[in-house]
Length: 136
Image 1 (cartoon, helix red, strand yellow):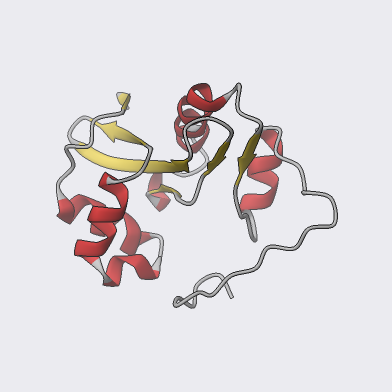
Image 2 (cartoon, helix red, strand yellow):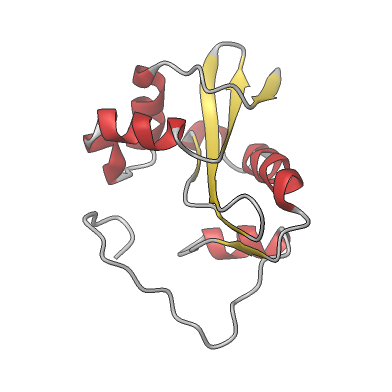
C-alpha cells in the first residue's frame, strides 16, 4: 500500500461520492453541494492509494482563532490502518497555534479523537439542526 496525503482540491466528484456512500453519510445524496462545500473549506486533506481516494478530512475556520473539523472519512476497507490519523495530523498541523480546535464525535470515533488529544468540552452539549439520519 502506497498512501499519499495531499492538500490539492482537484478531486473527481465520483470518488468523493463513493467515499461518502461507503461510509453511509447522507451528504452523498447531495453531490454537487457536497463538492462545493469541500472545495470551499478552509483546508482539505485527502489520502490516496495510488489514484484511488481512500480518505478525506476538512476544516472550516476563521483563519485565526477557531477551527472546526466537520468531516473525516476513510473507506471502510482502509480503516484502522492509520489513515484517518495521518489526515487529522496534517489538518491539525495547520491549526496547532489556534485558540480552539473543535469537532463533533459520536460512536466509535470518540476514542479515535481522544487519541489525538481531543477532550470533552466541559459541560457543553453539541446542538444542531440536522437534515441527515446517520448521526441521530
